[in-house]
Image (tube, rainbow, N blue to C red):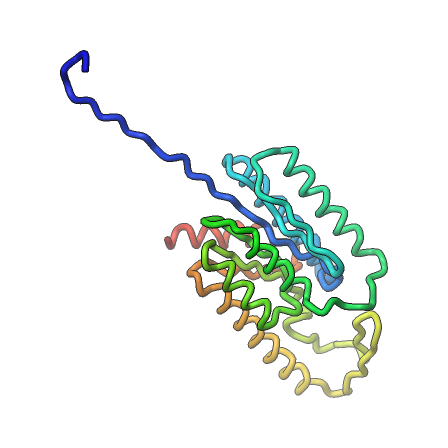
Length: 240
């Protein structure tokens, strides 16, 4: 008003991106035939994402789950909060070496974790789910759909090569820790059926997570998971 000339002020809204990590630390993740346990792969990917989010000045939260409990950490912009989150994840990882209760919950832990994430009432956030997706069923899919209504969701599948393709020198007995299964001497047909079932299951999960147009990342226990994860996301950014 003093200069008698028009002036324009431009304001940039601060964009806040809450990022929530959904990290699987169940007993099924305590497995590897190559280099790195699946549980360690998930923990290291979570740590990488968490520090990058804090570095960018955004809020970081998490849903950590194992066979017995689901822990919720609301998104916060604090290194102390990040330290507590990562500390609890390490504790869950260490508990994998303890005996797991034989009684399994009526609802699968991965479904419970997705439901917990969906009930957080977060909108416009980014959820990164790192799991082997054991027990991912129709209830899990329903919870995922609910979460995808208001947020972006990235799925990260962690698997071991043996889980996708049975080795030709497969042992005569397979065990899940409680029960044993004797395999036939000539198991080529069994191996083909096994690979077919696993491939179909993976494709279904990939389709469920890919419905939002975001990448579905597949990692293995070969020890190169961090490089492959960064490469998968960078390729997607270039495409977009």
